[in-house]
Image (cartoon, rainbow, N blue to C red):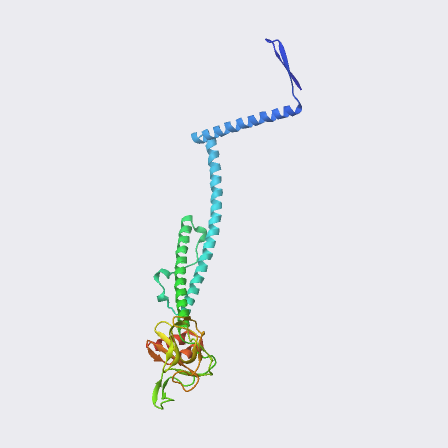
Length: 319
């Protein structure tokens, strides 16, 4: 296509050649301009009508807004229902956790009255989940968070109590000081084998060959390691709470004062040093400085239950 433009005043003309591609691009550019102008006018007229309250445009705006709000409300309701179901499931789990906590209370030897007020609480399943508003759901979540904090406090108390029981069990002399050897001469009054007179035997004797390992009856700290005229080579271990064990007549000792030992650790070897008639271990238990029958503690440890240990402990402390 060829266009000829003639200027009469200047008495000259100019020819413009338009190909098919140029015509197409020109048409597209013109169409785009018309669309932009129409969109701008529509947007301006629509906004003016909405602000001025023109009847037709105002009705259209209300319909669009109502439909948008309805769709948003349906979306929020669906999410609220899903969240409410999850909250209900979480509350049901909290009830199960509370029941488990009560059973663990029994294992820890605690009564419900022993629970701190901050840890006491009750939970319940969520009712009427589909009727919850956002405010109600938020309040329920706040209550659940509070209940969760209470359960954490309770579990912390139980952990502390069980750990204390575990430590106390480890610190009570229940481990046999000479493995596999029954006690010989028991605790109490007897005829002294050397003097032949009646005297208090303040511990248990374990007959064994010289060099047989002597084991700590419980964990603790070595407070005495010395040679005593009567006890010979002697070791004393402090187990806390004014409980002390003594191991006498050893051929040699393997620990020194200040050492920390664990239950069942080898601390010495059987011998016949001091006032002794033959190789054996003389084993004593003292509570608050008073001699106790070691067999009560060793028998309680053999049952591997907490009740006999508490009974022996209470009896030793005179409770």
